[in-house]
Image (cartoon, rainbow, N blue to C red):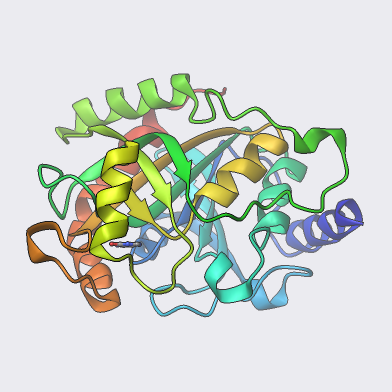
Length: 272
Ligand code: HPA
């Protein structure tokens, strides 16, 4: 069933000017959508027009698919995502992720705004995710009955892509520590006790997205990388009490550095 849906979405996208091949796809998180303004020869489609695409209703998320050129490469940008906390469905991004596979795009880079669980990782920092903790209790592959559901997540955050990210960061003069991202469902922010738990369990960042997309991307055999923009200290750290507004504001402030990192990454990307 899902197979058919994806083919329909792919046909629609191709028929509306987003045809040809792409070097990489990016999902842009809260406040990171302005990367689309960097593209030349951009063509875009609202999610609402694409068959079987989710609605993306959270403020800071535009809900558009944009194709264009960046640093001499052709990229596909998902400006906005659907979340588990909006839909109750951890597989809300299944069709968009499957579309990346269907269009033959080898690399998917997921980006998000995240809280820092470690006081030394300050708001405004960029972090390359190297592993995750799924603390949500949900999984996008629940009720999937294929053999593929038993997907391995060892090495899910592709080592080659992480090396390219590091090289890109060095060239751009940007500090890019690596860290473990903990997914909690939201939409309420965590309690200080939950953040202390996350620290003890080995999390460095906390957020409400990305992990289901990583699981889906590995299910479809895509190479995955993920980058967080740290927008705040997580609940209770130095007395923090995060807000969505703070998240959006800090992501916007870090946006220039984020754009430079992604540009540099795309420039480094040879066909994988
Ligand atoms: N918690 C969860 N999600 C987030 C946070 C946070 O502190 N900041 C940005 N997204």
